[in-house]
Length: 583
Image (spheres, helix red, strand yellow):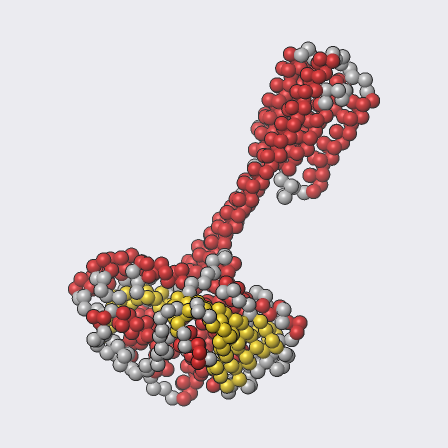
């Protein structure tokens, strides 16, 4: 775990460097050089043109300006002066003031103040520069412009012009000033767009880094949790006295709660990264609802509460829905109800509101007789990380993520979570969902609970973690399966070469030597008739499940797992492969 954290810190440090370098990407020093070079070449052109039309004094003045600009560039290059920007702006403004004294306003040289003013946002990083420094630049330009106008209007020009010279010089000054203004405006838009794109890229990189870290952290935490929960389940199956059973129930509740919090954190991270999606699959809605309360039965009984499940019999329909996300919503809402209810009951109700040829609309509600939510807190309760204060325990409860995730999931399903509550009298969370109807009909299956469900079935268990290997082996053997364990994908390939008579392969994804992603291709190429079930501690969403199925896996089970869940998935694969059914 420390290696994962160290890697994350290194990634974050690298990202911080990238974010710091964003302002270097603004290229302010580079643009100051570019402005100086532009002013130099513009001055050289004007000096030659002034000389061409007979304005030798103006030509000499501009030539001196070009020489001064060249000197400033060299001094900056050698590190003798620090601020090239203010030097160029001051020098250019001084030239225009002197030009006004020589030529008056008739040559319209004052128009060059406009491109200078437009260039300020390009050569000065207004997002990082202090307002005082930015104010100095703009003040120099505006003050110089005012002086230039006053001198040009009230001081007699020191240089004599012919009308032809005036017209030609004014025309050239207009063209260059307007062209320069347009160029600087376009350049500003270009550089700002480039900066924003880079900023978005770097921000996305930070989010991706955090997402990668949290996914890895989740895998690292869920792996030992699988051992804890698995060992608890195995102990509960064995004969223990009542006191031991009570301790095991507490351990199971704590570990399940910890797993739920980890899943919530990982899902919230997906929400922030805008990667949370809904992936509908075909399922029997009534069967899904009848199994929803199973994890809470023992906990509700322990608190002395009633757990009521009211499912409309008209919901025995095949629909397209994201079962993983639906279960997650109900689990969060039922967990909240259980947490804040000490007496009375908790009720899950599902009622058909409407049905058309292609869809069915259902109203869901989770009602409790708990502490309730005050009117002022009912708006805050859906905010991220907001926690309910329980006056009985004088503590804040929960991470504040469960309801946020429910709200976001329901939004993706075009629904909204509503709350009706009264302080001290309980709460009712409700929402409506519309599902697309599937064509097939599938009756609700009654769960089988005998201990010999996998009698005669041979399972190849591929798992590098010895604790997880022990837990899964014991669980499968509890259902009378014959289990052979290997510790990586290469060992699995070698085992299959010696013995192909396996009915199911249960394969971890992250393993040394050869991981599950590589091994699945080799297994399916040589032994396509054997179903391979992915066995992973990663948080599996529909996108990951789709990728696993495309890779060749028949199904996936997440660690930590429940024994009946593992049994159900293996039995499903045995039914999907007719030649295995007789086993």
